[in-house]
Length: 146
Image (cartoon, rainbow, N blue to C red; front, side):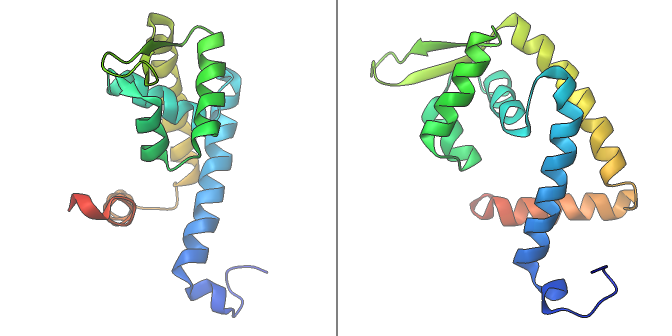
C-alpha cells in the first residue's frame, strides 16, 4: 500500500512516528554498519562522549532502554576499547561510562556517517521542514524541557 491509499493509519500520529522511526533506525544502522555500530550503540557512545561521567542508569533513562540492554551495549563498547567503566564515588554499585580516546575518534567518524545517512533519508524535506520536524520531535521526546 502506497501513501496515496486511504487508511486510518495515514492520519495516526503514533503509527507515523513508529514508521518514521523504523526508517530512521534502518538508515542509521546502514550508515553505521561499516564502523561496527548500531544506532543504539552510537547513542550510548554519544552520551559517554558528551556527558563525562554519565552513569549506565542515566544512559538507560535518557534512551528509554531496559538497563540490561544498556549493560550489553556498554559491554560491547568496552570490549572494543571505546568506553571504560568507572566505579561511582559515593556508590560502588553505580557504573560511570567514560569514552576513551579511541571512542572519541570513533564518535567523530560515526557523526559524519550518520549525517550522510540522514541527508539521504530526509532529502525530500526542505531545510525549513527539517528544522520544524526536529522542533516538533524534540517537543514530543522531551516534554518536560519546554
